[in-house]
Length: 244
View 1 (cartoon, rainbow, N blue to C red):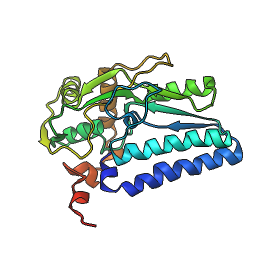
View 2 (cartoon, one colour):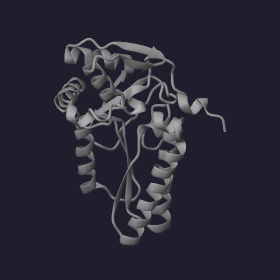
View 3 (spheres, helix red, strand yellow):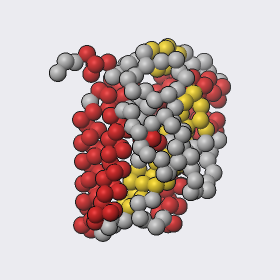
């Protein structure tokens, strides 16, 4: 998200043009395509699979655009595809700039965790293995006619509440610093699943697994913590300061 504010062109290139490239390959070589979208395309309203998209950020706009291209290729070229919209994923190997790994790694390093705005933004969380399992099952059961599947985790909490929960799980104090809110930051994401039956990992259990992985695998992330989007409290600021 932060990177899309800093340089939206990259997200158009990756999410829109990249999706079209995959769709072209699916059209030419006749393979099925699982398109991974996001709950952010819905905006702040609590939405089911039939709700209209209402993106607020360059990132979510690029993902919503990609979704529409998928639908267009299904209708125009009879490409076999489905669209899945998971909520916020977390778990091992997530890039350190993301909220949960950023909080974990900065706590391991003894650094405060920046909290955007008042920390009251609400997000739904799903452990990454749960998302993978749901998609695996969908591959075997989908009709491949452009169906949309929402995959919420069922654990909707405010950002500051998540930090306090993580604090209890790891039994360590997490220092926080409130910083300016980022532009286009949605107050909440809320999805309704009306099509699928599945279970998800309890949030505390998932946070424990995630923390343990990062605590035991600093070799994986140690070379990544010099990235500006991990180090900076407000990584979108350089873009705001530029004049075009």
